[in-house]
Image 1 (spheres, rainbow, N blue to C red):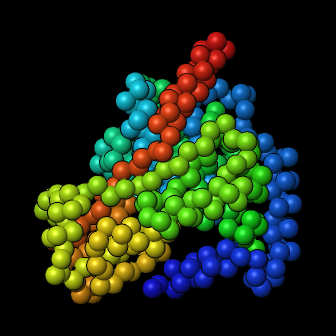
Image 2 (cartoon, rainbow, N blue to C red):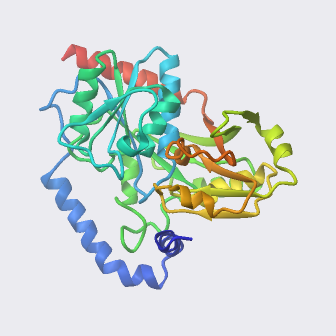
Image 3 (cartoon, rainbow, N blue to C red):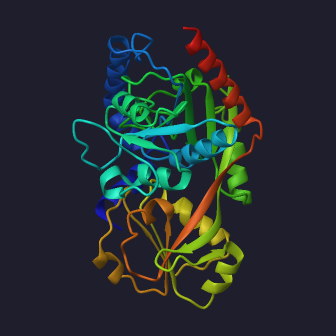
Length: 363
């Protein structure tokens, strides 16, 4: 495991309890909290002094790192399009060097230029994507290039105070709010009370195993989700098929499990929570000879794959967008789809957006 991944894993364990690390870092967390309050006072979220003619939905989190926002963004885009909307997406583009102006594109985008998450969103959803650290700039460039867009979804950006927003959605996973403390004593970028200010919260618990159900029940019972939100739903990312990255061969999950029997299978993941991916594969009946957790947004190179001793290498879609020029027929992508437990959630979002659109036209 790379050093960065080891450090992240160690911190993750410390942030789940109020132990020695948490209490030692508590004074710094207090200072961080005071700075947050000062920032909120001096720099409130941008409001109507800048006209945003198209509604904006921010999908973010308060837990540092990833909680599964990108699959949620893809699902929202796909389902809103089915209701007649023309969504577009804005993103920071982690790990990329964007110039003065945003870059905008649609379809198959270069992950090295746009970032792995924007490239994945564009590919999976078909929506136009605009990338820039200043998401307000990304918003206006998106509408200039794609004027048909009538709703903009921001992949992350909950703490990006220069960005106006109509609807805020927080995504949490089974870690909830960890020990409930701010960085560095805990994993939170904002206090738990922030949950009470958003319009919706999506709880990411993948799989329907007894352990997943138990964690979900504990999270709900702990009150971290019951905060008087306008809407609360659970979401699960389910692997539907496997695709060979070189040949394009597609196998449904049950056929792939049979195909992989008697073969040496290795799983790799350069995402925020690799263990979640590995557990999903094992719950499907796959036997992993080895699982390799990589740092989030890991950059792959040919020597990396040459050093893997296996018949099959499984990876996530987020990793796959960075490996499409790798001519290694051992590489298979686990392609998953997001499902919401509340069938009325997308209808609720539709009604919220319609109300925002009507209000904007009235202005």
